[in-house]
Amino acid sequence: MTGNEIESRQGILATLARIPLGQVSTYGHVAKLAGQPGKARYVAYILKNLPSDTEIPWHRVINSQGKISFPHASEKYQEQFDRLIEEGIVVPLSKRAQEEFLWLGN
DNA sequence: CAGGGGGCTAAGG
DNA sequence: GCCTTAGCCCCCT
Image 1 (cartoon, helix red, strand yellow):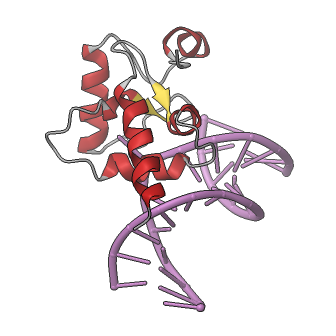
Image 2 (cartoon, chains in turn green, purple, yellow):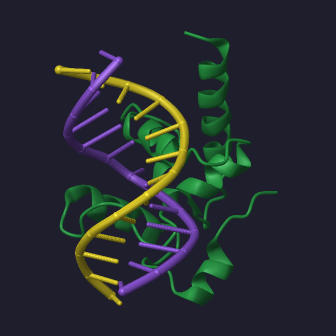
């Protein structure tokens, strides 16, 4: 493996870790903030393979449409939905809610 | 090396 | 609002 692989991965994880409680971000935006525009799917891949006991707030990442990227009827959808509710966020996000809760970085 | 498929996205019907 | 298409990056077979 190359050092770049580790860096790119760590960079994304570091960015994810900074998403504030009470706010959400999108796959594409996280990639961008991590200095890796265009790697939205890579962000998704990383999230998918996180250990179950991770500290990373995976539930604070939704898609560019302001929705949860899981089938509406799935367990995962329900878990993410519940976690967001706990933090005061209701998805799908309305246009106005996006302006208010979408994390744009520091 | 080829194919298939993902927690994606922007653009068009 | 829905669905398709094309582009994207990375992983697994």
